[in-house]
Image (cartoon, rainbow over all chains, first blue to last red; front, side, top):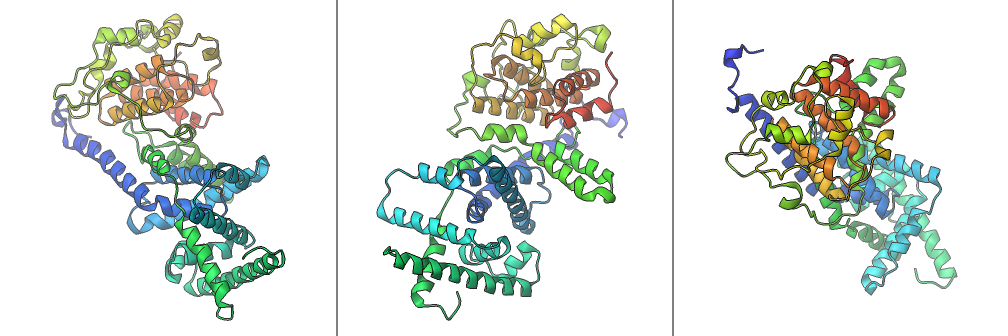
Length: 200
Length: 285
């Protein structure tokens, strides 16, 4: 506590006041930079671990809300592990809430939203994403996560190990199993599709 | 991909992964995210609700640590509930204008709210209840920083609802807490602010508080109270008003408003935060 004589006069911003006012500005800029650099990554991760587009929007918002209240922890190299861990928890909660609600399935909502005509290429891409998500949905969460991080986000095993908090060896073996499982599922789908006369 | 698989299968898998990689969120989502106000510690000195909950969870002790973690996580998420709910609204470009909310500060000499104006937008507190005069808060407030203070606020409406409410009670002027039963019976005004305008107005009020301009923050909160279109953000506005009053040194008023808020909304996500303003301040009779 400073003596009264050392307190800044009314209207004369003291050092503390200047520092206090500068910090929120920095925080806002840091947060905006974080949003711009990590938003797509977080959203795409949420999509591939099982949320619909609309649910991924909401979950992304929740992730960044949490991050906004933990600005000290979400800096530099710690930002992505924090966002990843938060996204996984938020997605798990969102899926539980969806199961409880038992309302219109998210995929149905996405399909309804996606009913407008699209160029062939985009339509094909959407079809592929639906297949991708359908296959991923049949995998265990652990295998699904490492596969998404490796094949879609193209992270190295070391980076995945950091995000998952696992030894690199565990990640490597999990990744092998994940790829093998995905291939099995895709092969089975291909066989069924060919048998039905559809194109793979 | 495993080596023993056919090249066709491998190619198909890669196409699927590429399709997943190509997906992007809508640009509107980024705008929504940028509306979030980072808040590690607010300027009123009270830690965010998330931190209060986290420290409460720690106090619960290791024997119940998992329960404590859930409480912390729930409150952590609840800390942003109001904003979260509002930001779920469809996104459109901010339509906030100088006419709607008042200009952003750029004047070198910001206009301070006239005490008389404050008296119309916020009724005088009853001396018996709080021992404060209506002018006192303005005098106690730190002088606004020129670069951030509000330049000119449009004159307040002649008969704000909050004033009618509290003058009847003879208590310090604060709007009824969010979702209070009493507010349902009050006549609604013509909606003036859109939801996004309300968010922007409250963000400006918080910025004013952070800049040390408590009086300016109160003017903005009064304006929100008068012109809000619904009750969606009333809880957030009330909590912010409590913080502003506390920052202005009007602890009894902050405490009384916090008590009313908690009484009316005992289970609201922001009630924990409001309670923290009751504990350390004198109880208002």
